Image (cartoon, rainbow, N blue to C red; front, side, top):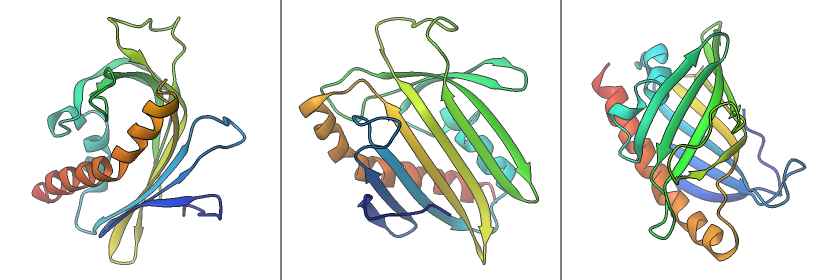
Length: 187
């Protein structure tokens, strides 16, 4: 489902999760593209699973300090704050528009940033720009596979960015383990 090319470097390889990074794309030569594949047992409720990744995420994700639904129509706007992946950076502030839908048992989600003039920055957080993000949850054999593709400018440059990239494997493993635990507890 996620195409891995020679330009992608494997950065996460744990049971149930694989992740790759591409240092630059045609959309940005300075912001890496992240790709992940997570697997889950097939007895999860896929609708509830998608809620656990959005509206119910604040209940289990210890990296989140705020997650709120700002407005709803065809697009749903979310504002959320994530604790920085490094001890030397401020929290990361996101405001995204998200479109989610299901088709024949496969769940899709697409998100990108909302311009700052639509929902201005509150407080002194580091405003992130989600260039794009997409996910797919689909049944594959006797498991669900959750694919994530994202390119996010967290305004972390130079040495600090490379320092932050070192935290990704452990952070993604921790995220997966927490998500899996809460998803399985609801089966």
